[in-house]
Amino acid sequence: MHPLFGRANRIALYAAASAIVGVLLAAALRVLTPRPWADALAFAVPAALVYGFMVLSSWWVCRSNPLTRGAQSIMAQLAASLQASAAWTVASAVLAVLLARGAHLGPDRSGILRDLAALFVIGVPAYLLSSVVHYMLLAVEASHAAERRALESQVGAREAELRALRAQLNPHFLFNSLNSINALVGTDPESARRMCERLGDFLRRTLALGAREAVPLGEELALVDRYLDIEQVRFGDRLRVERAVDPAVMQCQVPPLLLQPLVENAIKHGVQDAVEGGAVRLEARREGPLLVLRVENPLDEGAPARPGEGVGLANVRRRLAAFGSRDARLVAGRVGETYRVTLELPAVRDGEGADGG
Image 1: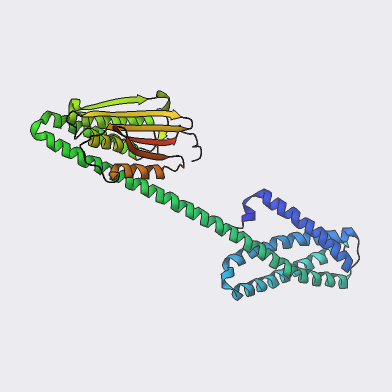
Image 2: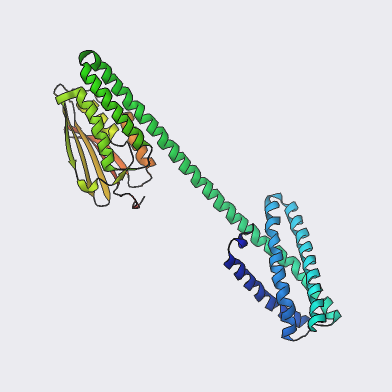
């Protein structure tokens, strides 16, 4: 369907513009064959309205004959313009005869013939002008369609990346947990049983949160607590957890499964190899427009330096990039005798927009 017909107000505006063209056409016909304004307007305005809608047929001619076809498109437009102008001339001839016989308006027979010849001559370039406008509209439409496809492709790629990251996070944690359970089966079967129960509860919550684009920080911290319950069975008193969480940020939106890999890294590198264990510290607060999350663990001076960041930090960086905000970033490194990972995200609650996102 022609885009003009999508809204009634567009049709009305187009008809008004065609009527104005009819007034100009009446003035031209009065120069060609002098006559009263009433006679000229009675003929020219209806004729202009008719041709105004006839030239819209060039929309379909343009669609079926794109400019990439070169000479074929030009010939198709010329043929269509001649046909449309001829049809308009015939319709105008019928109108002129009806006005002359029914209302005694208009010039004599020779004057009518001059009017019809003028209309045929005017009709060809008018149709071609309509074709130029329609080719421009089709170019704009194609540009918008290309932008939509590019946007849909970006959204699809982002969603695919998120799904891949979620699929990678769960097996990574599951692998470590099963190794821990295997280590406990022979020495402490009861602890292994409790760990299996808590692992099942954790995985159920992981599936529920992982399917969402973003979750409140409170839900993400609750998932971290389930993970820490599992690790507490393994490490006992060797694992200590310190929290400094501002209740005001609990409803801020974060990517799901964001903190668990960081806490897992903190336990692996700050508690697991230390004879006396260590404390993992979690912080969450707001600094201006940003939500600041921090995970710290003690450093074992005798442990060899770790090359690179590892899977956990790499996944978190990619999840922040997929979160879609220029303000989201991760900074990790040694600070004194601790290893600190700091996350910064826009402090956005559900339903709000991210500044700069």
